[in-house]
Amino acid sequence: MSEVILRVEHVTKKFPVSGGKFLTACDDISLDVRKGETVAVVGESGCGKTTLLKAIMNIQRPTSGKIIFHGEDITQLTGEAKRQNYRHIQMVFQDPTAAFNPKLKIRDIVCEPLLNFDLISPADVDSKARELLTQVDLPADFVDRYPHNMSGGQRQRVAIARALALEPEIIACDEATSALDVSVQDTIIKLLVKLQRDKGITYIFICHDMALVSLFSHRVAVMYLGNMMEQLDGDKLDSARHPYTQALLKAVFSTDQAKNQYIGILPGDIPSPLDIPTGCPFQNRCEHCRELCQQKKPDLSEVEPNHFVACHYPQ
Ligand SMILES: Nc1ncnc2c1ncn2[C@@H]1O[C@H](COP(=O)(O)OP(=O)(O)OP(=O)(O)O)[C@@H](O)[C@H]1O
Ligand code: SF4
Ligand SMILES: [Mg+2]
Image (cartoon, rainbow, N blue to C red; front, side):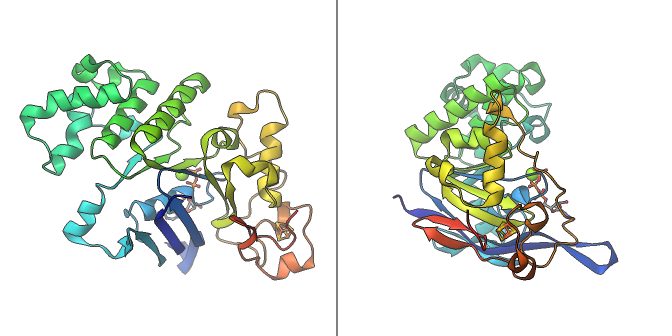
């Protein structure tokens, strides 16, 4: 097993909302990320995936907890040390168009991070941009295009090329393939897997599509209402023991066209994040709920080596 390069330790993020209340978007989340592996974080909309990623990216400080990267708590970095840390963890968004300056050509978009860190001279931008485009299997002469002259899949390749420019150790993808149709999604995943093999990149892959995640993730972390419900190896998903994970898998695999099916089709409603019940957050949707579940929140416990479940009655 490869070394842990990033460790999320008991991260909680609370947002102040109206009426003097607080919304807990992430509640005591812990997660290990190993070098050269893909960790997928899955869960329905609003469960706290992006909030967790923003803490890892160091663009939103958690209310409490630590993010340890190379032995250092990066949530405490400030100034130039914080800026330099961005070199090592890069991000790819669902909609790259929003992150690109529409007035810039692709050449300048992919090399912008290198220019920001003074790692390239303007004279070398063209050749570096061509090299980066080639790495993501785009024609080198796309350097002269603008983002709006490209397809969604091509734009996402540009976003990956830009993320690769600084040779980061970790690339965090927030629903990076969700807006693409299934066949394009497939080619982007193949590209990510190839780059991981060639360069040893570590991915944190935020996604609501359990079927997609099961295809290429080494670890899967399942979140619900700001809580970590289960963590297990990607190739052991069929041994998932949390009723929520099992429901997600059942929803995915119960139909033929499951490959890109949205997972949020469980019975019952997700409680308001402002009014989370005492006890297990999943209790009102769980067919196995008993008295203890309504009284005490289950801890995330190791039920077998490297398999963690937050449930009083793992199935
Ligand atoms: N700045 C903020 N202020 C108040 N509440 C916030 C803020 N950012 C996020 N939230 C809330 O925190 C919770 C988690 O949001 P988050 O964006 O992390 O969810 P998500 O899992 O990424 O959802 P999606 O799949 O829809 O992207 C949600 O209830 C959201 O409304
Ligand atoms: S703790 Fe209880 S309610 Fe929660 S998932 Fe487990 S069995 Fe269901
Ligand atoms: Mg999100």
